[in-house]
Length: 225
Image 1 (cartoon, rainbow, N blue to C red):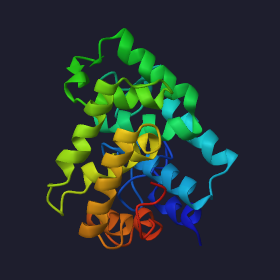
Image 2 (image 1 turned 135 degrees about the horizontal axis):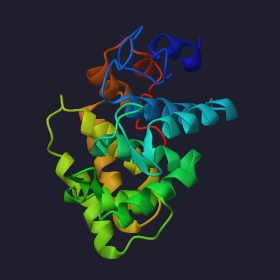
Image 3 (image 1 turned 90 degrees about the vertical axis):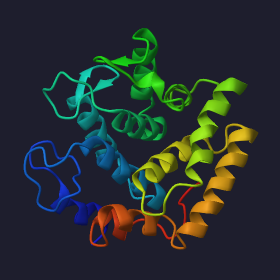
């Protein structure tokens, strides 16, 4: 079996979103959109994704949308999800669903980066990441803002992997756009491979455990960055 077949046991029955748990029930976790974005990114790396995968992902994002560009933790909720779901969806949308990435940027600008009362603009990387995912050019200052979190992460504990997976998503979008970001991401990649000799497989193992399909099919390097 491949990733597409093995992931079936980790899909929620109603939403078909990817969970961190096997045989999940309704709302098995709070990061269903993010984990589904991990799955789509791995499909892209392996070259296994198809039109049906893209349609599933587009429909999933639409189902979790409170309004265009604003995502909830679970369908039907009116409170926005956190920054990590929004970043994961924006980065994957950049490569397979660019229309939605542009809607996310439009929502952020129109609403001053307020997400049902939560100001996500306080995260310095949030604005430039959404802007880049929408296909817009970053100023030199915005490139610096985007680079800061990669530099800060160089000293993060080895067991802290959730942020590193999100940085990997961001690196897939930003890696070849600007020389400054390219250099910083190259340094970050070097440090990750020092900390995790098997690259993403080691990172996913710490986060999901060795038996999860996302771990089993994670590459033993840093993927396509």
